[in-house]
Length: 216
Image 1 (tube, rainbow, N blue to C red):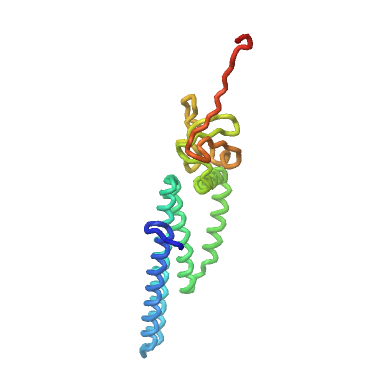
Image 2 (image 1 turned 90 degrees about the vertical axis):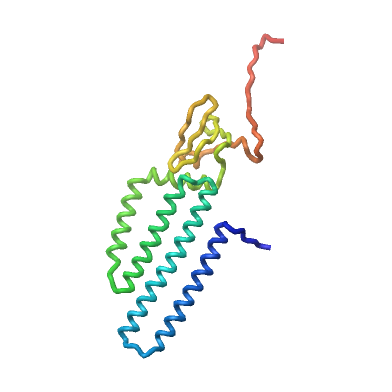
């Protein structure tokens, strides 16, 4: 039996879908009722455009609600550093898309806007390629969870320490000698890492003992 727990992303999505469908059906019913009245063509066109805008507002509200639920899921997964950025980027992206859809509906030429956005995104992507690669790698680490804050890990370069924070650009590791090691997320994502806290919460640590050959 598949159960959806209250407060989860799936519960928020289904609740938002139900509310959105009910509102859209109400919009369609009102549009059909008004269409049967003997109004002038201008009134019918104005009413149609108004319902179109209201439908976009309803859909955008549902998308924003879903983005907030996804952001809460990220926060619960320990991705507090990424949650504000992801929330704002997703909302801005969807808002821009529906804004262009509305402009297209009313006969505005949006292709120059699309071209400008494409060129601008390409320029920003090329200029911030190292930063973006580290951000994407950090997001991948938080989703895949090869290690979590509090785990003791060993890097391919030999350093051993406890993970303190997985940030947007780098991961902070408290080494055994008391120093703070800051490693770019892209390096961690593309290298081998030993997690001493997996597959269970117990901690295993190798310790080397050196003895004099002359000892009995």
